[in-house]
Length: 195
Image (cartoon, rainbow, N blue to C red):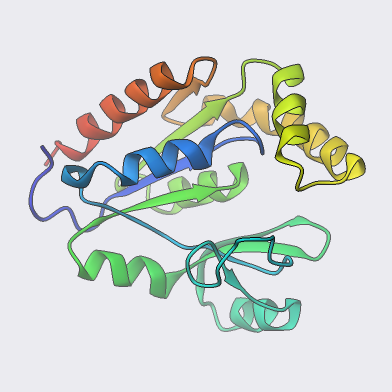
């Protein structure tokens, strides 16, 4: 069980799109005694069906996002695709720490590394690996949220992102979801139990 005051710790979960990071983050958040709270990222992309502003993302216009960059409002940000900005608001992390909870992030690979570089002693960075590119393509296609061009763009990006995996604290292959969930939970418990 983690210490009662877990403020100041961060769990980064990064992966190529379609590798299962969101499923893994939701599982960790469902384990109450871990004391985790989700950091809602900001983005400039359009909202998908069933997404809620402030729960899934803080949906900002490109102009609003750029203004927040100039105001130094992010601990990290990136232009992931052209005019598709994603970032972590400082105010969101501070809000979670004030609640004496640890922050958990579901972030892009570069965003995850940027958080780890900025807070190396406070961050456990996990990289979720897809079993193969074929499985990754199948998962993205079955989501039915992307065009075929968008899926191909994400697969090309995934190939580049896999090269960053060794820079993370731990790489977990999501080939069998229950096994991956167990491995991630053990790693997070071990990290949070350190004083």
